[in-house]
Length: 344
Image (cartoon, rainbow, N blue to C red; front, side, top):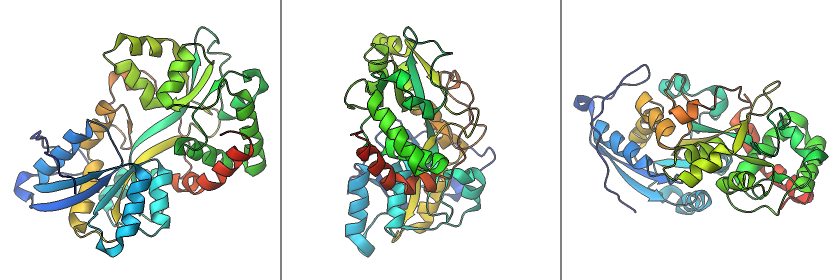
């Protein structure tokens, strides 16, 4: 198992959700399987260890291999906590009976109902909106698409930039459209998107934003934190890219923008369950939530946490209240519709 040195911050906190005190800390171990690969998470984990005395042993890998590893290990698995990006991935683990429900008033109070599993098998701890970006020299803010549904309009033929259908961010987005618009309309929408592509889908979200800024297309779909990280970059070229595109939070006049999550869960056979629950509760504490906002430009799930100036500059928005489990469970059907429509 991969063991990493942990950074100590020596910070105590207790603003409204949970209080950690050194005097209450009990030594122990937490085995964490994580699909998050952000440098700022090092300080996050180190702070937990410092506050609680619990040592973290961490395995880092891509989400699907981690879930498969849990399945293969069965009741011999050392995993206490599984962390993934995107609700679709954590929901797959739940459907495979690899997680266990958690009873925690701290988590129920902190995490909004639409960002956690209805049976309390997993909890979102950071969120990101999937929004529309547009080249400000090629289209005005008034003419930019206002809704996800608008992306299928023939007026955007040859102008749309988006990742491949196989990426789970798009599967979850289309899963939310399935819930809102039904299968027939969503299939028609997928065909419209496929017809409007400026190029064959390739690259990540940052690549879509850069391509829009360069004029390879006019409209791009990406998660907010990729854009904010460009704003915050120390590289002038990244700042220039960000300056060339505008941001639209879709569907503000109806259901709201699609919001996805990073999520955590206690593994089915967790050998250190008490430490696992304590860790999940720590992730929704004010200190940890501030790490997500300041470290990786993600939105906190807990209300009232201070945002970075760049994240705050995007303004407030209405978010879709659809429960994340719903769009996650729609992932498979969403992929079928996208592939059927020619969106590869």
